Structure formats: structure tokens, C-alpha cells
Length: 325
Image 1 (cartoon, one colour):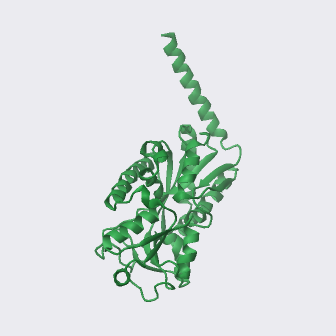
Image 2 (tube, rainbow, N blue to C red; image 1 turned 90 degrees about the horizontal axis):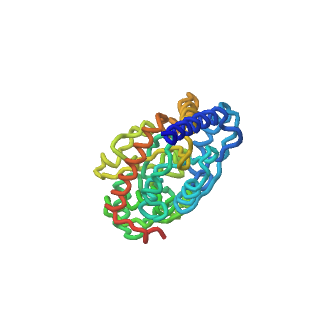
Image 3 (cartoon, rainbow, N blue to C red; image 1 turned 180 degrees about the vertical axis):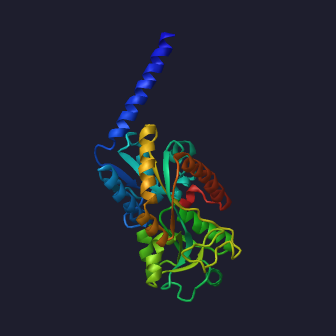
């Protein structure tokens, strides 16, 4: 009986200490791990949030780029980081793919991460290179080129085993056109070669492509999914064109396993305010991204569903660990 009372008192004291800790948090700079190379899709958006967090919490949230192997290096680092709120990660939906290829990042390991908040939902599309494919303006023309030139279509990815790699394979599968994946350490590096015409196509976010599209250096020939993008309402989707290929893409914040719940709640609240700030929302929407926000529980459900979704896509396209080279 006494042991049970002592345990209850101990848990209550721990909860009180944790709550008090969250009130003073953060007391020093926070490391925001970006599991990709600098200059890609993620860091430009993350800066919108870190500026708001600095203003509201009085401490800098400093980006720590740990790119490589499609983002799995940064993920592995965060999984082992101290659960004190001073290391968090902002990553995209490709995180739900890793368990299919890396034994040390299997489903049970990745599921230990704590999803804090879904920050944005991003429109995606099939992007081509005017320099490499000057006469391709549609998905139909891309398929015709691929069939007329078997084995020549090169699709740049942000890393083996990442979302862009899986979607290159899925696009090849549904169109019946062989597409060779060419892996880079991040979106920015791959985009340089795509613009130059050294690769021909990519599957990525409008957020990252629109500046170069407006400059005439890239071309979006279809958006992905069932619904058209408000950014390009006149452009048909892959589904409308008869190809059942999707690219659900979100950006979200995570913290290491065992991070105290009051810290998770505080980060959720502060990121939520940043996402809904009118100036941030306006910038996101101009780039083809929609602010989301919401509860930890809703993002946890989304992440769990995506773990199942990507497993089905990987299996349907017969992608194995041997394809990670």
C-alpha cells in the first residue's frame, strides 16, 4: 500500500516538474534538424516558422542540416537525441518511407518518434526540363518520348529511398515507360541538373519548383492526385489523365521519443500560431502549400496512415533495398 502511494506521489511530482519545466522552456537555442541538404524545399518554409518562434519564445530555433541517404541520416540522429525539447526535426512525408528499406529504421523504431504538428500540405507535380525535353509540354508527350527513346528518360531524386525516388518508380510503373532514377543529396542539387537538361523529369512539390517555372527554366506538365491545385487550376491532374499515381506531401515537426508531453504541447501551440499567422499563410499559398496546424493527435494519425500507404506503394512497384544504390 505504501509503495503504491509513494509511486502515485512520485508520478505527480514528475508531472509538476515537467509542467514547470515547460513554462520556462526554451531557456537556450533550439536545434531544428533538417534531414536534407540546404537550399531545398524544406528550409525556405522552415525559416517562416523559426522567425515567428524567435519572436514569441525569445530563443533562436537554429537549423541544423543533416542530409544524406534520402533523409534517413537526420532521422537516425533525432531518434537518438536527448528528449529535452532542444532537438526537434522538421521533415516531409518521405519519412514514412524509410522503414521499407533501412532495418535500423523499421516501422517500430520510426513509430517511436513523437509527431508534434503537421505544418503544411504541399501540392505536387510532374516537372520536366525545357532544356532536356524542349518539345514536351504534357504528360502524354512525356510518355510518347519515353516510349520512342527507351531507357533514356532520367528522373532526378532527392536521395535513394525518398519520396521522389519512389514516385519516379511509380510514374514509370503506371505509364509503362522505363525511367532511370538519378540520386542526389537533396532537391537543390538535383534541380540544377534538371534545369541544365542533364536529367529530364522529376516528381516534386510546386513549392520548390514555381520560381524556376516562372523563369521558364522548368515546366510542370501535370499535378498529382485527385484534385487540381489552386496554384495551377488549369492544369490537369494525373488522375484526370488516367494515371492513378499520387504524391501526398506534408511538412511536419517531430521530437525524439520520451520528450515530456508539456514540451510537446508547447511546441504544438507555438508552431500552430506560426502556421496560422496571416503573412505566413499568404506566402505558403502563393507557393502551392496550404497551412495545416491542428493537434498532435491528428498528425499522429496522418503519420500512421502514411506508413501504411507508402508500404503499399513500395510493394506495388517492387522496389527493394537493392534499388537504393
